[in-house]
Length: 108
Image (cartoon, rainbow, N blue to C red; front, side, top):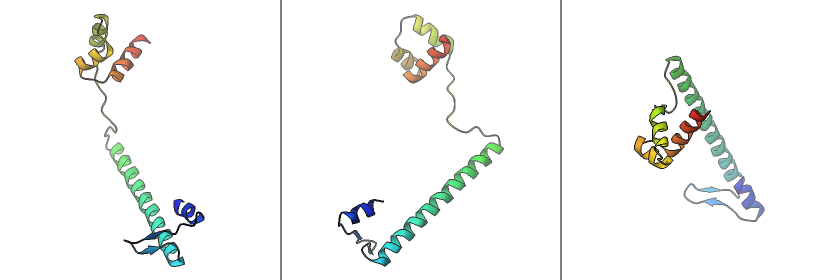
Protein backbone atom coordinates (compact mmCIF):
# COMPACT_ATOMS: atom_id res chain seq x y z
CA UNK A 1 0.00 0.00 0.00
CA UNK A 2 1.29 3.46 -0.81
CA UNK A 3 0.68 4.77 2.70
CA UNK A 4 2.89 2.01 4.14
CA UNK A 5 5.62 3.07 1.73
CA UNK A 6 5.28 6.71 2.79
CA UNK A 7 5.34 5.70 6.46
CA UNK A 8 8.54 3.69 5.95
CA UNK A 9 10.11 6.84 4.49
CA UNK A 10 9.12 8.78 7.61
CA UNK A 11 6.27 10.70 5.95
CA UNK A 12 3.10 11.16 7.99
CA UNK A 13 -0.15 11.26 6.02
CA UNK A 14 -2.95 13.43 7.32
CA UNK A 15 -6.11 13.93 5.26
CA UNK A 16 -7.16 17.43 6.29
CA UNK A 17 -10.50 17.51 4.50
CA UNK A 18 -11.64 14.13 5.86
CA UNK A 19 -9.87 14.69 9.20
CA UNK A 20 -8.07 11.34 9.15
CA UNK A 21 -4.67 11.31 10.84
CA UNK A 22 -2.85 8.14 9.81
CA UNK A 23 -0.21 8.64 12.46
CA UNK A 24 -2.68 7.57 15.17
CA UNK A 25 -4.24 4.16 15.78
CA UNK A 26 -7.74 5.63 15.28
CA UNK A 27 -6.75 7.15 11.95
CA UNK A 28 -5.25 3.88 10.75
CA UNK A 29 -8.41 2.03 11.80
CA UNK A 30 -10.58 4.53 9.89
CA UNK A 31 -8.41 4.13 6.80
CA UNK A 32 -8.67 0.33 6.95
CA UNK A 33 -12.45 0.52 7.44
CA UNK A 34 -12.80 2.83 4.44
CA UNK A 35 -10.72 0.43 2.37
CA UNK A 36 -12.85 -2.53 3.47
CA UNK A 37 -16.06 -0.69 2.58
CA UNK A 38 -14.63 0.24 -0.82
CA UNK A 39 -13.76 -3.42 -1.52
CA UNK A 40 -17.23 -4.49 -0.36
CA UNK A 41 -18.92 -1.94 -2.64
CA UNK A 42 -16.78 -3.05 -5.59
CA UNK A 43 -17.75 -6.69 -4.98
CA UNK A 44 -21.45 -5.72 -4.89
CA UNK A 45 -21.13 -3.86 -8.18
CA UNK A 46 -19.40 -6.86 -9.75
CA UNK A 47 -22.20 -9.18 -8.58
CA UNK A 48 -24.89 -6.85 -9.93
CA UNK A 49 -23.20 -6.59 -13.31
CA UNK A 50 -22.83 -10.39 -13.58
CA UNK A 51 -26.47 -10.87 -12.58
CA UNK A 52 -27.58 -8.29 -15.16
CA UNK A 53 -25.57 -9.97 -17.92
CA UNK A 54 -26.96 -13.39 -17.00
CA UNK A 55 -30.49 -11.99 -17.02
CA UNK A 56 -29.95 -10.43 -20.45
CA UNK A 57 -28.62 -13.76 -21.78
CA UNK A 58 -31.68 -15.63 -20.50
CA UNK A 59 -33.87 -13.16 -22.39
CA UNK A 60 -31.92 -13.94 -25.54
CA UNK A 61 -30.26 -10.56 -25.87
CA UNK A 62 -27.03 -10.45 -27.78
CA UNK A 63 -24.29 -8.87 -25.71
CA UNK A 64 -21.34 -6.87 -26.91
CA UNK A 65 -20.71 -4.60 -29.80
CA UNK A 66 -22.81 -5.27 -32.91
CA UNK A 67 -21.00 -6.98 -35.79
CA UNK A 68 -20.21 -5.03 -38.92
CA UNK A 69 -21.74 -6.28 -42.11
CA UNK A 70 -18.97 -5.85 -44.64
CA UNK A 71 -19.57 -6.51 -48.32
CA UNK A 72 -16.73 -8.94 -49.10
CA UNK A 73 -17.15 -8.61 -52.85
CA UNK A 74 -16.95 -4.82 -52.64
CA UNK A 75 -13.76 -4.93 -50.56
CA UNK A 76 -12.22 -7.37 -53.02
CA UNK A 77 -13.20 -5.33 -56.08
CA UNK A 78 -11.88 -2.10 -54.56
CA UNK A 79 -8.60 -3.81 -53.72
CA UNK A 80 -8.30 -5.21 -57.26
CA UNK A 81 -8.87 -1.68 -58.59
CA UNK A 82 -5.64 -0.72 -56.82
CA UNK A 83 -7.13 1.17 -53.89
CA UNK A 84 -5.18 1.33 -50.65
CA UNK A 85 -6.44 -0.03 -47.35
CA UNK A 86 -7.18 3.50 -46.13
CA UNK A 87 -9.06 4.39 -49.28
CA UNK A 88 -11.19 1.26 -49.00
CA UNK A 89 -11.86 1.99 -45.33
CA UNK A 90 -12.85 5.57 -46.14
CA UNK A 91 -15.11 4.49 -49.01
CA UNK A 92 -16.90 1.83 -46.95
CA UNK A 93 -16.88 3.93 -43.74
CA UNK A 94 -15.12 1.24 -41.71
CA UNK A 95 -11.77 1.11 -39.97
CA UNK A 96 -8.56 0.12 -41.77
CA UNK A 97 -8.25 -2.75 -39.26
CA UNK A 98 -11.61 -4.10 -40.43
CA UNK A 99 -10.40 -3.96 -44.04
CA UNK A 100 -7.25 -5.87 -43.07
CA UNK A 101 -9.28 -8.51 -41.23
CA UNK A 102 -11.62 -8.88 -44.19
CA UNK A 103 -8.78 -9.25 -46.68
CA UNK A 104 -7.00 -11.78 -44.42
CA UNK A 105 -10.28 -13.70 -44.04
CA UNK A 106 -10.75 -13.81 -47.80
CA UNK A 107 -7.16 -14.95 -48.34
CA UNK A 108 -7.49 -17.93 -46.00
